[in-house]
Structures are given as structure tokens and as C-alpha cells.
Length: 213
Image 1 (cartoon, rainbow, N blue to C red):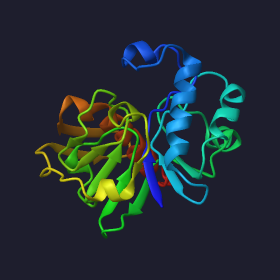
Image 2: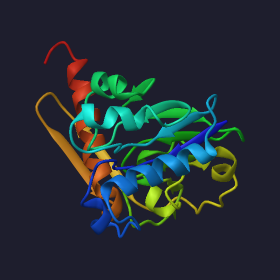
Image 3: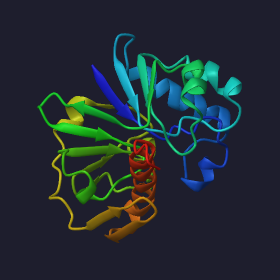
């Protein structure tokens, strides 16, 4: 069985205040999130964590992550460490972004930050986190941040039964030469950070593959 979640922020004391989390201490928050995860997830399940697992030293978080049941696959968030570090912490796989075919046949993109709908036209849905205040559904995007889901992972069956909206009108065009990048964009504020990360990755990939540069 597949599950989805994001933004656990284990060992992050200030997140309790930032997001009004109903825990009286960091330790209570850690235990609450681990307990609610393990109430749902079985050992043979797969959990896709769409970014932002913990803050602080990896060695202080490793024992917490390893208590979480299931085969844990991480899509890196802006607070996460290197692939090597996150695997050592307790993840079986670590990705920058990941493509996934859902049980109903739709193509999903897993990416920590939401992207403009015009950037993800080859996908039927984007599963993301990062936006702790929501909304859960925005156009063809689903937000799996724990703050929106009672601090529990969401089963794939619940994801596929959500009614998504129509793709929201936005516009991104990119022209790349050997020395210049021309970007024209009209996107929503919530998608802006994801677009910037996408553009950096996109242009770097093109330039790195061009032997003349």
C-alpha cells in the first residue's frame, strides 16, 4: 500500500508556533507524528515523504526516522540534507523529484514545492508539500503537508478519490542561449518558489549537457 506525506519537521521546535501545531513540546510533537504514522502504516507499505523531514543534526533525527514503519522514499525538500545523508538517516530512496503512476492510471509528479500548472502539462496531478497553510487542492495539485491532514500519512486511495480542479491559467516560457536565459512568466505567488527551483534545475541540466559551454 502506498502512502503520502510531507513536512514532518521533526526536532523543529519553532514549527509548533509557526503552524499552531497542537503539541506542548518538541518531544511531544515528534512522538505524536511517529505514533500517528505507525498507527496507519504497516511494515510492507511504501511511504512517499515529499520533503522537509527534520531540522538539526542528522544523528539526532536518525533514531526517529528509523522508528517510522514502511519503505520510506524521500523527495528532497528545502530543509533536507544530501541524498547520502538522508539515506544514512533511514530512507531507502532519495529523489529530487519523482514520477509515479497512480492506481487509477494517472501520471503524478512528486515535487516538494508546488509548480505552475503550465510547467507540469505532462502530468495529471502534482503531489507536493511546503505550503503548511494549504490549500489542499489547487488546480491539479494536491498538498500532502502533515499540518493539513491531522499529522498523518494519506493513503493513495484517498488521493485518487479527491476531486481536482481544472488547471489554473498561468504562463511560463524560457529561451536559453549559450550565455543568456530569457524567462517570461505570469504565475501565482504560491507557485513562484517552485518555479525558481525548476528554472535553476532546467537551465543547469541544459548547460551541463552542452559540451560547447
